[in-house]
Length: 436
Image 1 (tube, one colour):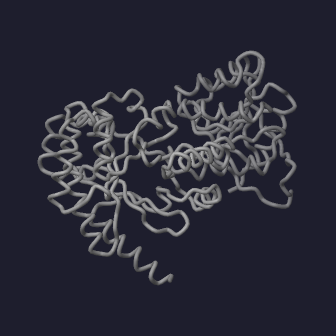
Image 2 (tube, helix red, strand yellow):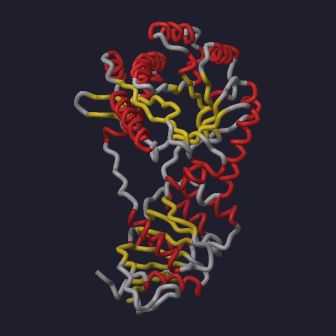
Image 3 (cartoon, helix red, strand yellow):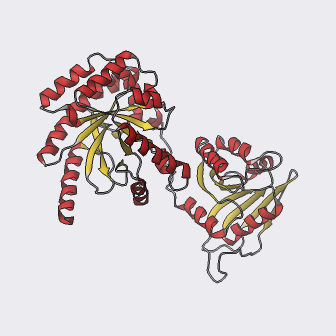
């Protein structure tokens, strides 16, 4: 379907008028090529009249369903009140009156704008900061087209808006924490099960280990997210009970994997508050002895934010875990208030770099620099570095070029149950044998 007459609305000096768009062709698109209609409502926020006209004409050429324009943030807000939600706001940042920054702040909470394309001549570092602001406001950033506009770049970003998966609206059950009684019952009945996400060698594809996550296998509601029950476990002081149950399950899976010829290092998430438990290492020793396992097969991942002020009791637990042969990983590194002093003081031997650096790797030169610096830091401190959140082969190749060796993410494997993991390991091994 093609639309020759997209609607364009302009608001000025408190008045609004609607006019049919005439046919224009923007530079960069051959007149002989038919452009599919884009079923999008787009708002152009630009104070420069000529540049606003150029943007509107490009959007007409792309046959957007409706195009609205405003010369400052206040006019744009008034227009949104009149016409309702738009799919995309093509937004300049600097302008007289209410600028683009304030406009984004105002619409971030209102839901009147679904996604944003930044068009600005500000320096790259300032635009990167705005990208972060857009994300924190809960808006989807489709891209940054800079100035002058290029129609093909704009077309690609608008198509990206159409291609994105629809966000599922959370149901009441999805945002309501489970009751303490039901969580205690789930724990007692072993409904809280360990799930496993493999870590891998970026170059060879070899499995390096697995991270243990948790899922609630509810008898009537199916598989439930930890967001429903982890806060309850933490509030009720049940984190240790869950950890020991997960270790029991994981050591069994580790033993089965070893029988298949695969040695798995198994990593568990450990909250900083659990380090104060004087029985932590004693209980762990008993579990390892019961399964005939050794501490070298375990890693404990702790987020940096909980370790900035680690007391002496916590430090003792960390030292004891290392004395048992366990590895210690500082998780989500760079996501909180990193303290290099604490990193040097505490006995960690692995850094897991936060996935946010990987998500922005393609468009953010500073993320590339941060990854390189973390790799250099890890090498200097004698610590391995694991990259979280790898979702594409392009990311994997770029990380390889930077010198990364270990990673984790959906590109390689999603979290899975113990039984599924063992089957996956066997299939993975069979594929590698065939390749060789």
